[in-house]
Image 1 (tube, rainbow, N blue to C red):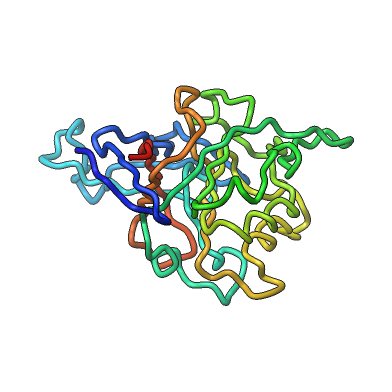
Image 2 (image 1 turned 135 degrees about the horizontal axis):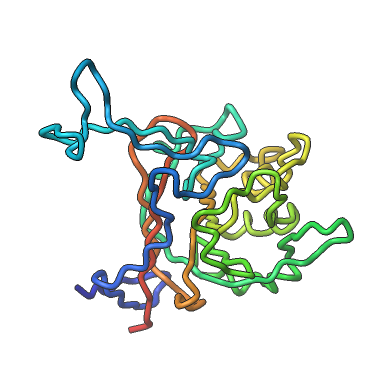
Length: 250
């Protein structure tokens, strides 16, 4: 199914039968973990002699799920994650379709050995962010272990707050393939989150951050139609399923 759309006066086409799912599936004991969160679990309900599992002889599967969205796989969060002025992710993400650009970056290594994505390493300019509302960033090295890695106490790649302040001026939705825009241990400063959501100025209540996506190396840098899917949960964050569709100028 091919659609045509108009964005900022330009005509594009996208094939909705060719989705590129960049979320990490939630699978029992086989998903990434961050910040010491317990692993995602899916277990059958047990009540008396009833065990909600077809494998155990039940007529139905009837499973409980245990998940910490911030610590288990792909998730999308609102400013409510760090600021009481924010709304839930369900209230915040009112629009699910966005024009997005995918770019790949190799972080800079600092003197303390931290790997940080900066504006210079990203090589981003204002004109690169014209006509888009979302930016998807793939970090190198890009290994499949991102889909199952336990990031706890590994000090993974993070983002410079000055870059995030710049991005906030031009986009509404940021998607990254690491657990957080901020350093794993930063003493609660959260300088990156605060910079993107502008919490010290005119707070950006409508912006979202999606973390722990996974972009196969076969997916090329470029322009896409982005669909961010969440569950209707009234908290600051939801497990999410961002999907890309290649955009071509008509």
